[in-house]
Length: 84
Figure 1 (tube, rainbow, N blue to C red):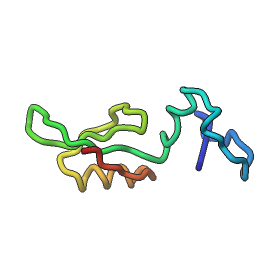
Figure 2: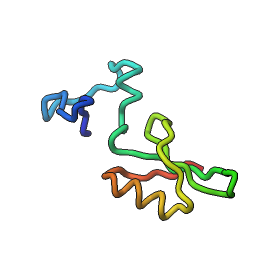
Figure 3: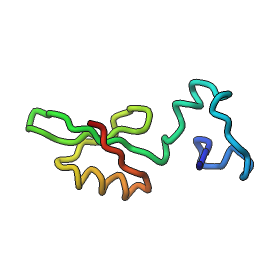
């Protein structure tokens, strides 16, 4: 896993094991923030669309179709995950 501080520098020693049983709620909320984005079908004023959210649920964008949403996520070096 790639864990970084807000300035992009690694905040752990490579090879260190992260024990998720001993992390704070804030640290848990940050897991996957830079690697995963969720795509969720939504209804907008103009019809159906796909909302893109960060791993913590923060809204990031809306796309007109699933392929465009996935492409935008991949373009930003993240992995798309579909939420039903």
